[in-house]
Each structure stands twice: as C-alpha cells, then as structure tokens.
Length: 638
Ligand SMILES: *[C@@H]1O[C@H](CO)[C@@H](O)[C@H](O)[C@H]1NC(C)=O
Ligand SMILES: *[C@@H]1O[C@H](CO)[C@@H](O)[C@H](O)[C@H]1NC(C)=O
Ligand SMILES: *[C@@H]1O[C@H](CO)[C@@H](O)[C@H](O)[C@H]1NC(C)=O
Ligand SMILES: *[C@@H]1O[C@H](CO)[C@@H](O)[C@H](O)[C@H]1NC(C)=O
Ligand SMILES: *[C@@H]1O[C@H](CO)[C@@H](O)[C@H](O)[C@H]1NC(C)=O
Image (cartoon, rainbow, N blue to C red; front, top):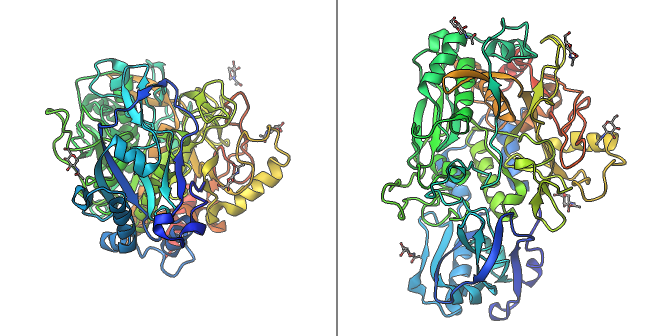
C-alpha cells in the first residue's frame, strides 16, 4: 500500500508540543471538470472528522487473520468470526482517542466542542475554516464543477507527527469524488452511477434489441442464455437443498432499478417456474425500486443482474436485493457497508460527505430520514457490478474500505466485484496522466477499485469466440467491452497471489513492451481480476423487449450464482459457507478447477493491454469456473 505518512514514525518520541507537522494527505491533480474558484470564507463551518486508526487493520495482519479462516489447509477453515468479535478486535485504542483529543484541545479548541463517535472510530468537531486551517496546516478552497456543483477541499494537509499514527483519514480534506448533486434535474446527474461521477459511461453496454432468440446451445457465440452458461461452466445443480440457510445478495444503487415485467418476460422464456418471483428487497438508506425513470440506463444493470442471478440459482434459492440509497441523496459502497457491519457503521461521523450518501438526508425533507447501520445480516455471497477508478479516491479512503471487506471475509462473506469494462483503462475509458489527472488520451493504465483491494474477488469477462461452440475454449472478451485488469497503484500483492503474479511478470512482461511508469511492473502490487466468466451477448429483457448486453457486470452475478450453489451443497451437509475465496482458489488444487483462458487481450490507453496466457493473467485471472470440478473440492474442504 502506498503510505502517505512515511515520515511519521521517527518523530513520535519527540515532545508533543514540539511535534513537527507532517504531511498526511495530498492530491496530485484536480479531477476532470473541476476548477478552483476562491479561498473559502474563514468563518464558514466545516464538519471536521478524524477517522482513528483501527488496530490490526494493516494488510499483513488482515491477511494472516483471513488465511486462518479462509485457506483450505488451515485447521480453522470455515471458523468464521461473530460480528461482536470483529467489532471488539478492530476498535480504536484509548491511546488513539486520547492523542487526538489532547492535540485538539492543546490547539485551543474547547473540549466540549469535540465529540467521540459511538463506535469510538471517529472524533468530530464543527470547526471554522480558520480553525481547520490552523489544525491541519492547510488552506481550504471552493471548487466548482462544470455542472455548477460546488465543493470545499484542500490540496494537502498536515498533522503533528505524534498524532499521525493514530489517524487514518481526515475529512473533508483532499477527497474529491463528490456525488454530484442528486437534486439537480438534468438526466446526466440523476443517473450518475457509483464510481462514475458525472462523466463515466454507463455499463453494461446495450447493443440493440433482438427479435429472435436462437435455439439454446447452438448459438452461444451470438447469444448467451442461462443454458449456455450452464453448459460452459458445467454448472448443473437443479435442486438446491439448503435454501432457507443460504443467501445470495445482489447490490444495486438507486436510481438503478429492476422492472418486474422485465423479470417475468425473461423468466417466461428461460426459467418459466420463476414467473412471478421477485428478489427479497432489503432497502438500505431509503433504497427503492423506483419506477419513475425508465430506460436502459436506469433498468439495464438491475434487470441483467437479477434475471441471471435468479435463473441460475433456481426458484429454490431466494435472491436478496440490496437496494441502496434514496432517490434524492444516492449512496456509495460505504453506505452498504454501514448496513452490513455495525462496527463500520459511521452515521456518527464516518461517511465522507464527498464520497458517500449522508443520512438522515437533512437537506431534503422528502429524502430518507433514517440511517441504516448494522441493520442487516450479510448474505453469504454478495455481488456488485459497480466500481470506481482507484485514482478517483485517496489511498486512505480505499484502505479503510478495503479493510472492511476483510472483516466481511472474517464473517464468512464472499464479496464479488466486476473488474470494469475498459481493459487497462478505467471507467469512461479514462487513463491516467503523469500529474494524476484522468483523461481519455492519458497513457497510464487506470486500475479499478474495489477490484484492486486484495480482500475482494474481482471478476473479469470472457467470450465464446465468433463461430465457435461452447465446447471450444473461451477468450478474453473482445466484443463491445474489454475485461478490466492490471496492477494496482495502491495495494501490495497479497500472499495468495505472489507466485502467479511473479510468474506472469517473469514470463510475459520481462522486458515489458511498455514504457516505464505505464503500470506497476514491480510484481509487488496486487493484480486483478481473480477469475472471470462470460460477459458478451447476454440476452436480457429490458423495458419490454429482449436485447443483447455486454459487460463484466454480467460476469459477476454469474460467478455469484455458482458460488451460492457451492455454499448450498456445503450447508446441506452441515459445513460452513466458503467465505473469502481467494486463498482457496489460488491454491494449487483449486487452480486446476478453472478453465484457463489463454487467448485475447484487454486493450486500453492506446495499447493492446495485457495478454491472456496459460496460467494466471491480469485479463481473465485464473480463468472461468468449472463447477463440476470445484464442487467436489469445496465439499472436501473442512
Ligand atoms: C455539528 O453541527 C451539526 C449541525 O448543526 C450538528 O448536528 C452536529 O451535532 C454538530 N457536531 C458536533 C460534533 O458538534
Ligand atoms: C419467448 O417465448 C415466447 C413463448 O414461447 C415465444 O413466443 C417468443 O418468441 C420467445 N421470445 C423470443 C424473443 O424468442
Ligand atoms: C463466421 O462465419 C460466418 C459465416 O460462415 C463468416 O461470414 C464470418 O466471417 C465468420 N466469422 C469469423 C470471425 O470467423
Ligand atoms: C509498485 O507497487 C508497490 C506495492 O504497492 C509499491 O511499493 C511500489 O512503490 C510501486 N512502484 C511504483 C513504481 O509505483
Ligand atoms: C502480447 O503478445 C504479443 C504477441 O505474442 C506480443 O507481441 C506482445 O508484446 C504481448 N504483450 C504483452 C503486454 O505481454
């Protein structure tokens, strides 16, 4: 992980009052569309929040903890933690709270103006801009987006050296991924997706309506249906047995919404016993299946995810829909995580107004007036087809969220994210420039988050080659979209992946055909995706007609369905769910249970990207699942 505060530790011992000021965060460039308009008024009030360092949440400790419950060779495989154990183990120390509180009062702010959050994770203070500037040795400015939205931020900020080890994140400071004002009436801002503030293209990609659905299996190169996927991945499991113990969650962010009639139209053709079936709605922060706005951009993702997710697990397994965010404020991944884990829960100060939906929605009386914190028991498998570019977020923000995915792993949850649809480029085909900004003519590869978090499972996309049958190997997806993949700029390579990443770099990227600095060539950074599944030519019913849809958006719910059925088989014989799968799937026995994808590339940023090759590659990961091989292996595991 890129450490922002590397100067800090040497200075900790010095007297506190003499503690030197150390840079804690700095943004390298302004995101596209924003410009700095003026210095912020000194008497304006900022809701300053200090996220305290969680003990044991460093990457190495998290890896060790997860290996203990998630590595198939561990005697404790499957012995997942309780939420209470997670909360206690990661609670910030008294020492951290004390250090921050005394520094703030030594700086002249009355102690009774400072509040410690219920979960002890956050220290909060409504500070004037002048106070905040003095505490953080910075200057606050007002920035304006082309759309007219204003935003307050600084370019860099500092903390006293003795405070640095106790603080993970301070907001508002440098983060800039403002959710553009949802109250605006223009269509472009109301359908902004998580991770695609303002400018991103919406995936999955719709390639027009179709009038004929081909006979199943003969034309899987032109149209993917549930039957094609079952055949490709030897995924035959018609009678789930543990439906009431098992769970499969699919996440959607409002205003994305499924259309009930679309589900029925799809089920009528592909899974007729499901006609009339709906997902179980778990509304988070006012999440609604809205029917006000219609069109592919509002319904395509949800219709796709639920039609395939539900058909593949059959009627005997309910699918849970996590619908996140009200129509007015919207939401982000942190809002979902708040609801899933009370220990992350941050209604008392943790969410970042620039990145996350803040509830209760005080600014809008029609918005959600509650706040969902620790309200849900997470499903065993959770699939999300939304994502950010890593560079949209600060390293501290991504680290905090990534640690939270590790906690879900400790609880026994499998977290899947689609890897992105632009190959080595990011959302909207944006690439990085040397100054850190993102543009479509940038040259530096732009990795996807949370895919680069080592504690989630990232799913890339494959295709049945044109004119090929389901009996021939698939390639990396090269139709309409390209499988997101590459190497993180923020996260170090996890142990489970070290061997294959080194192998790939030594055999294929040594020497690298690309100029230095285009991607992290060191072999010490996290590579993604972890695995893949078909992402081309999905037959989906959207807004009353069938069309063809493309994207890693399709791949993730398919992998989720397959893993959910593996959980079913384990639960039915009294075993635990598979939980965090990465230490397992990279183990030698399991690597052989994937269909290795050895052809195709993931172009982007003016290059052909990386090559799919024998073994792991940062295009299709370990390959696509072979359910018939994976099931017995996972049934044998403790
Ligand atoms: C900051 O101000 C808001 C709005 O007035 C208030 O709700 C909140 O409790 C205050 N926070 C602190 C820490 O004083
Ligand atoms: C779906 O099934 C119906 C009823 O069997 C059939 O009439 C229709 O042609 C199918 N739809 C398509 C697009 O093939
Ligand atoms: C697939 O087959 C059709 C008809 O035989 C042919 O026109 C087309 O060029 C083939 N496409 C590829 C990619 O081989
Ligand atoms: C590559 O990634 C590693 C691990 O995250 C990091 O230590 C190193 O500084 C990175 N190298 C470059 C050139 O960015
Ligand atoms: C991909 O394979 C082609 C053909 O073998 C080779 O020329 C190219 O350098 C490879 N690119 C990368 C990034 O590995």
